[in-house]
Image (tube, rainbow, N blue to C red; front, side, top):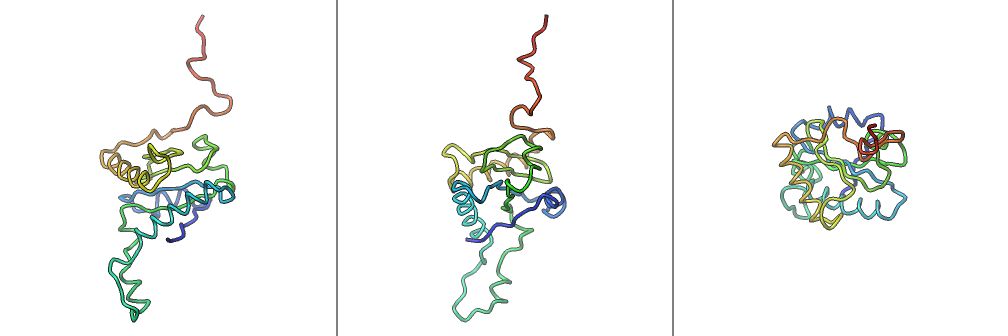
Length: 168
């Protein structure tokens, strides 16, 4: 299990667009650390992140810290990077995507949003759902299938649905 990197509001767009390589999927788990659901989800994601970043070979008890560090994969070469965003500290993603419930999962590839959902799959938020969602997001990104730049969940305050407009 490995702790997830916390992405702060002021660095969010820079991280998504400049820090993460354009050929790497980044999963942003939007969490509220004070809720049980977010803590449980974070634990599952930390387990997955730990497995992704584990050394590529086994070492004996006499291995040095340098040998172990050298065997860990480069973060930039991984197919996916998993990070967290603390929902309760900022309205950035609330305003951008119009959601309030957590956990929320946002996946970006090349700075473009490829996946956004409060669940990862049919069963909700399980390790199997996580693997499947990552696989599908990578497939969509390879096909250049992204969510619209103005993607939003539902209507924002003050908006009226076109189906509620009446024509006289």
